[in-house]
Image (cartoon, rainbow, N blue to C red; front, side, top):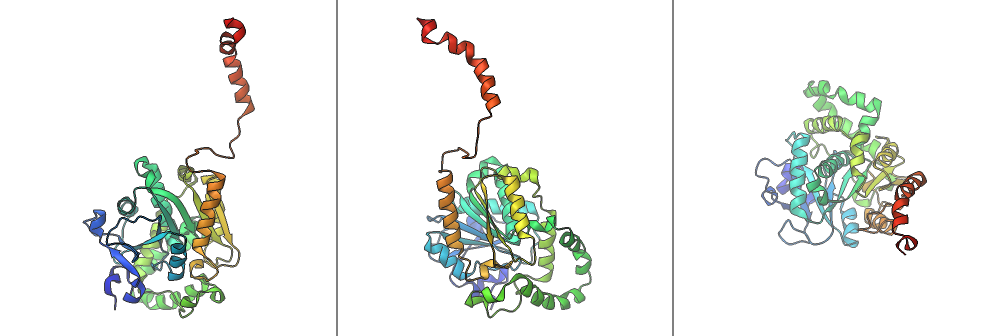
Length: 341
């Protein structure tokens, strides 16, 4: 049965071990474009005391895989999943407004926002929204983007193909009849079958119940509308960002996108390449998200201690120093011991 996961297309089995937080806890009283679930290790409140990882899934709109959630728990993180509500066609304004309300209710000290594939594009837009409105910047502690679908707009072929989707959608029953076969083919494209976790090896296609055709069309159109230009990315320069990219990603040029993010965000953006992984890397057994995030946090802490506010790569311009030496020379003379004596 669909049970309490009906708004996101999930079954009771898929939501086992998770507790849904009512949208009223986030002061969202209109239709919510997110279904929010937290680990059932917490009390019946939206407030969580442990460091919080907030996960935004890919186009399949699934929970974080259990083996990845458990590995994050082992490092002291708690996990919240923000799934998109099926049947709704939110704008970026809806997503940013409601996403901000959810993060405000979850933590006052900031969350680690993780987005995978389509969720990477959503996480990136939400992060930009938070930092551009400075009063919300504290809600974002760190940002992790995994094979982010923001790469779509940087790939001319895929971007052009996405433009014809509205015409495909209008074919109605034809598109609907083809979709199950497309889901079967897509599964082969996004996964490396010999690397899948044992819990995922029973699957052979993308679940079209959690990602209905009309919903998928709308989510792809959102990616096309998203602004992740170089000018906007510079706003994230003070936020620690980790861009994870699979080198065997057959769907997106994830490595190129990770390097683009690094170029425009700057030194606070780290790139982590997965040499043998496919697009759906979180389904793989050898990819331990808990270990990788914990290692990244400890490495960044050694490079730049929290609260320093100092960029370790910063170097003084010698010409500027000489200029100020000239400006300050009279004051240095007046306050020197010889002059005062």
